[in-house]
Image 1 (cartoon, rainbow, N blue to C red):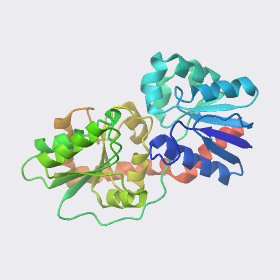
Image 2: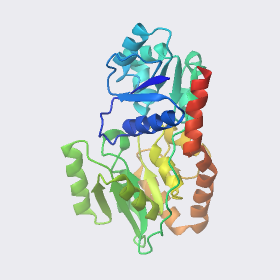
Image 3: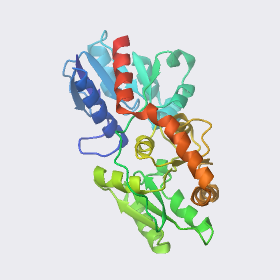
Image 4: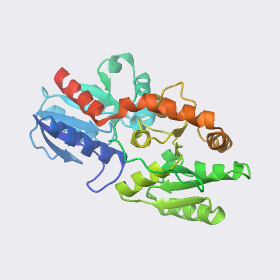
Length: 314
């Protein structure tokens, strides 16, 4: 088939939506389809459209549905869709009605949908290829935060947690990701001046970021809102346990019984969990074991198969 894949993130962007679009395009090409990624649909005829983001891709979906009313239209719901826009935004709500099928990126996402929408929705977990394992740093217990500096990520929660650690802690935090506003960059710089245990390294090439992640003892995802974070897949692929805010998007990735959650926004509890991971070997081993149980969900083979099954349905 000829497939148009719509993502609101432009070429060259390193946002999650763009990464997902590029990865899905690769999988679909492996399955024999012709795929073109566009930010806004240019009207090119296609057998099928896949759109990421209900609100921001709405115009493309609407025009495609009007021009090709019998052609399948798949909508992938992002974190801001699931946990904000679909509750009050008319264009996001109409996008869901236009969709032939919908995709959520983790199991808890289904709970945000009305039953009539849930029946046409499938879970397709994101993936990361196996990472080259690295020796963990010995001098420090390194916590790695990966994510662009924007409000939805609660980006500085881990930096603030450092002040609540016991004096004997050897924890250091590295933060990988670009600042999406000058104010965020200024705040990161100020935090580094205040506490040398926190280092913001900015936007690194993917291979470098993967290496620094694999050298870390834990990965912290402190987001207030996530549709299904690919950095969790990358951490598990690198055999790095995750400490996560207890939002639905993280629970849907790691499982509701995972012991590595802290109340979203609570830096005191985050500090307690980091200290426990550093100081309690049995607890750290438990985190590793439960991450290993979830790891098979996030392989490239599983993600490609999920897309293939969805197209077969249609």
